Structures are given as structure tokens and as C-alpha cells.
Length: 347
Image (cartoon, rainbow, N blue to C red):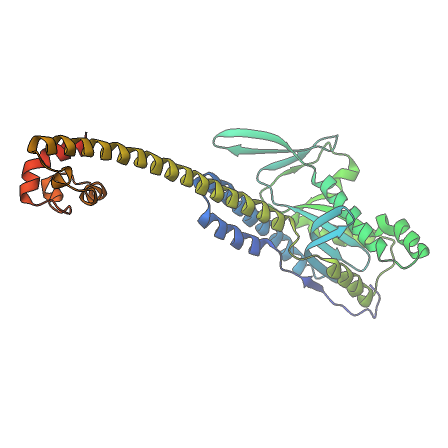
């Protein structure tokens, strides 16, 4: 930094992220989800909270770096058919750092092929598994960022200069934000090893890289202009979190529709069965009514009429006391016909 260069310190132009809004939305989804989806939603919420904690560790390190830098958190960029959600873009006087934050449980080993292997304890068992390379992931982010910036250049010459100098200025860093994570990169190739660091090494790494860089220093205005460019390219509500929420919301809605459809089918089947049972009981009651009317040499409706029969089926009495509440059934009828009618209803 030049003798008369004004110090600006670390400045966050964008500090918030989509994570908090995502967590709030997912918690609202959780309240209306069925049991089959609740555990899945809870897992997504926990992962988001864990990722947010890791990114806050990086924010703390950058805020306390004492360096001149502009910082952008959670930037979503698109160009043609490519997209990238970048955890942090850090612009110093000499470099632009594209940071991928990983707050992983367990320890990380990088082998001589560049493969990432994670190991951790789970329910008394030692788990060892390969994970998708965050270096490959961040390289794609760099390509999107490069395309976005190159497309904004005015002419062929400025595009060519930018293309030629890009690898010297833009640096990919994978930061392991969990302080308990042990990194074993003993057998990793140098170019891989140099891109993966722990959060507590982030500031010293940036300081050392800036110091060893032969790039010309940017002025404070140039740094700010570049930071504002990427901030202006950010597309809100298009992050991975937004996509995950949309997918989960669609899954919850599909579950609700399926449950409603199944409930409707059950109700229709129940109604159908109820209709069949009612028709069967009507047949039995009419047969009993006809038989009694012939025995007593009277009209069938003297025993009970159709309106009384329907009230009988609606109230469906379980005993003589309840039968007394049915239209047309007084003490005489209940004593005379009650036992037979109750037997027909509950046969």
C-alpha cells in the first residue's frame, strides 16, 4: 500500500444472506407437513443453520482482518445456462478471492488424486465417505464470475486483457469453517493443497498471497467500483436455498394433495358402504313392517311410516331409551316392537 493511500479497512457491501429467510420459510412448511416429510424438512433446516454458522465464522475473521477489502456475502450470478451461488467475494487491493465455505462435521483428507474423503463418528460407528470436491465446485463459480465480468467489457481489447490477467487476479479458496475439523492434505498435490485452508488461517493466507502478488494495487475507488459491479449482478431470491425451498414446498403441496385425495377416496368409499348398509337396513325394516302389519291385519304405515323409518336410521338408537327419541316411537311402540327393531339395526 502506498504511503499516501487512504486506509478503508474491511467493508461489507453485502452481509446478509438468503439463509435466514430460507430457515423461516422452512419452519413454516414444517408446521403443515405430514410425518413423512417432517424429518426431511428438519434436516434441511439443520443443514442451513450449520452452514450459516460456518459462514458467520468467516465473516468474523474478515471483519477483524484489519485489511483494506470490500466483502460481498452470498452472491448469486447467472450467465447464459450457467449459475453460481458464491459464499464470499473478497476484493483486496491486489486480488479478488472467491471463497467457498464448508462447515463439515468430521475430518477431511485429500488424497493424491485430489479426491476429498470425510471421516466421522455416527452412532458408535466410524464413517468414511467421499464428498463432492469443493475445489471443482468453486472452479465452476469462478467460470461464471469470469463470464459475467467479461460480458460487461466494452470491446475486444478490454476483453482480451481481462482474459489474460484473470488467473493472476482471481483466486479460489475453500475454507473449512468448523474449528474442530482436522485437515490432512499431506498427499495432495501442491495446487490442490494451496486452495484449501481452515478459517483461522484465512486472513494470514490473504495477507501472504497479496504480499507475494506482483499485481498492481487498485485504488479504493477501483476496489469499490469492482465490488459494486458484482453486487449489481447479484440476483436476489435465486440462490440454492430459494431453489431448495421451492422444491420442498412443491413436495409438501403434493403430499397435501395426495392426502386430500386419499381422504376423499376413503370418504367416498365410506359413503358408498354407508349407502349400501342403509339400503340393506331399509329392506329389512320394510320386510319386518310388512310381516307385522299382516299379523295385525293393518296397513304397514301403522307400524311405522317411511319418515319415521328414516329418522330411525338417522338416529340409529342403541337401546330402548334412545328409541323413544325417534319420531313416532312412544312407550307402546317401543315395548311392542323395540326388541325386534334394535335387533335388525345391530344385526
